Image 1: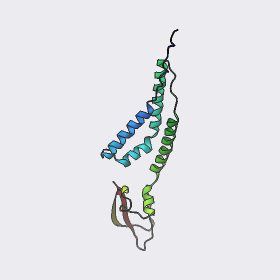
Image 2: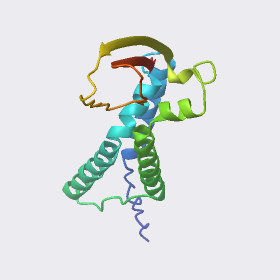
Image 3: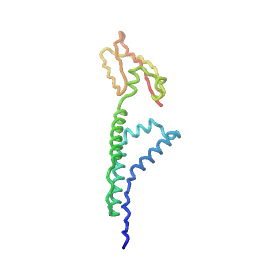
Image 4: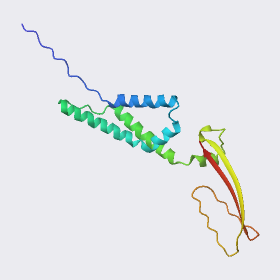
Length: 171
């Protein structure tokens, strides 16, 4: 009697997306702990360029699909973990984008916080200056300010008095 020939089950091919994500995260955290990556700069880059992660994941899946077609096997689909990771990237990416557009300096000023309360706002620099010039009664004044606060008050003399207070937060 002939013995039945056992055929091994077909090998399941796994996606490269998971290992690539783990390697990338490991490299980023290693560079961060070694002091080569500034975390606020990394957050800025993520807030602006997170859609590239979705594009990269799509390119990886497309390459895997093409490789499976060349080998005559069925391409692996998107796993539940891949779907969850995509959703997390989208949610955190949108949150980071909105947070980067928010004026956190104004929140700090409204809450009257300084650098000793939250050191990640950077160092605080303040400058004061004053200017007095003759200003005819029939002249007009035009103030252009792209960022900051301007306070205008009247004067009893024929001069314009300008008091400048600059408040800057920087790393």
